[in-house]
Structure formats: C-alpha cells, structure tokens
Image 1 (cartoon, rainbow, N blue to C red):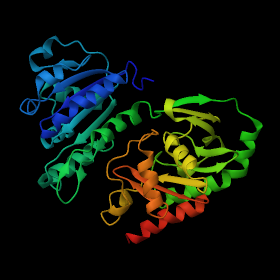
Image 2: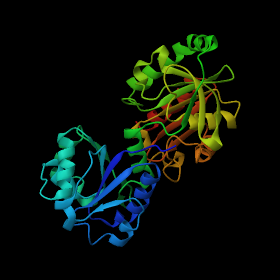
Image 3: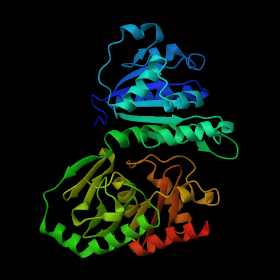
Length: 356
C-alpha cells in the first residue's frame, strides 16, 4: 500500500548536522508513493552531500542555479527538516528572501500543510526571538519540537518526523478490510458505549489527551471495540466505535465492522490483546506532562516507537509487563491496560499524580 501515492512533498533542508539523516527519510517517502522535490536553504550546502541527494531514485533535487527554470506542481505538504534557528525565525517573520523560504512562507499563507522539525541550539530555545516565533507559527503549521535531555537538544528522530507527515496526509497506515455491519455490532456498541463515553470525557477533562489524539478499546464479542480514527475522546458518539474482529499482521490488514475506520493505533491494540488474554481494556493517550517527564523515564521505551504498525509493538508490551501495566512510548504517548477501562485509566491517573 502506497500511503502517499501521487502526493507532492516539498522537502526543505536548512543547515545543521542532522541533514545527514534526510536522504533515508526522502527514500521512505518515495517508496510510499510520494513525488518529492528537495530544496536547500543557503546555509545548507556545507552540511549535505549533494551527490547523495542526486542519487536518490525519483528525488527531484532543486538546486539554487536551477530555481528560475523550476516548474513545480501544486504542493500537498511542505516539510522543513532540519529547521534551524535562523530558518525558523525567517519563516515566522515572513522573510521569504530566497527560493526555499519563499516556498514555505507562501504555503503557510495559502494554508497548506506545513511541518517544521526544529533543530535548535539549546542556548536559543529560551530567547525572546524564539518564543515570539513559536507564538506566530504554532497555529499555522505543525511544529515538531526537538528531543531535549540533559546531554543534548536535537531534532526529533526521523521516524517521528515521517509519522507526522503520514498523520497529516493519510492518518491510517494499515490496510483496511471492512465487513458488512451485523446486528451483533449494534448490540456490542449499545452494551459498551457508556464506559467509552465516560472514560473518554475524563481523559479529555484531565488533559490526558487533546484534539483527536489517543484511543481507547475494550475486549468484547470475540474481538474488541475501539474508538475510530480522528475522534475527539472528549465527545465520543456511538458511531465513533468500530469492532475489530481479526487482523493479518504479516499483511498489515485490520478486519473490522462499523461506520468509521478504527483508530490508526489499532495494530498495537490487536497485538496486546493477542499477546495476553487477561487484558480486557487499553487506553492510549497523549499527555505531554507524562510523555516528556524525566521522573517517569523508567517507564519509557528506549527508542521512538512508530505509530500504526504491528512492528515494535513487542517493546511496548514488554514494558507493560515489567511496569505493572503502564508504559510510555518515547516522544509519543502513554499506554495503560487493565481488566476494564476504569482500571486502565487509574494507572495513568496515578502517574499524573506522581508528578504533582
């Protein structure tokens, strides 16, 4: 399945050492069907291997000497990675004084999807100029904050940047196989809806999730009910629940019934339920207080775990077993499991209270 089939992706690099990570990212986008056009800001040339970018099959590299002749398609998304301090501030102040910056600022004005993966020197992060730029751009585009710890401040892992592109463009990464809706589906929804509505509302009110992030599920009827993709957990409706009856992991297939597609994180839920029959409920939420807390570091996966895939789910499951049914997916979100949704919720609530 080509997740980005025929999508025009404009990929802009600005000058930092993390430019070396970009070729692999471009290759993945192309392998997923994207038509990638790559641009370099003026401060990038000392950080990239032009030959390596040229050798990427089907990558259209737009170099400075060719800008006047460039004939570009209509962009679907513009990604800047890495995005350094000078580039970030220039974008925020609408300073499109060179071709790559003009492409970014124009896309923002046109309200296109724009993603900025920050790679900022730590001494700049608390400056008034940086905070001013954040305020100007945070509602106009998607900002991927750098990974910050005691030793370094660095651009987020390539997997997180790529996942942000997929989330913006297609959301679902599994192959959907929908079954005809049965009477049993409606009965399952009727019998289980109240707990979904209650727990979803509490998660939202306690800021354990936001917008359409996160999902919840419960084992029932020989499969499991799960909230649909793109649902606001604070306002779940009956038609927002999908019933997953089976999956084919080796083919990345999810088999389901319902009105709307199951959550993008359905493969993770399926893996956990399939691994342990004693688990009957799962909550996946996004609380920045918990996700990025150094105090809760022992609960976190070693690396960023990409969303929407059966792969690497075992790392999350092993942490759940080790840490009393709670785990943090690094730079991503939280997972808690239990005999029911209330029990899973209390696991997350207790971790939030530990931070007070």
